[in-house]
Image (tube, rainbow, N blue to C red; front, side, top):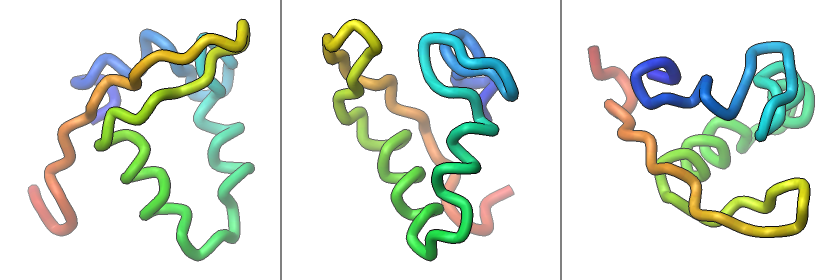
Length: 70
């Protein structure tokens, strides 16, 4: 889904790019019971994200197939 949605343009698996790496995100949310719901809400809602220079932009909406979808 990340590849199809173009996420790797701004996010790396282990390397920080425009956004944090997936490993950084995993460490931030590790052990938090609402992690999946919060991350799903973030990537499917198009909420604004803060960039390193302090500016904000709308995050591209990722289409989720939903739980249990093939």
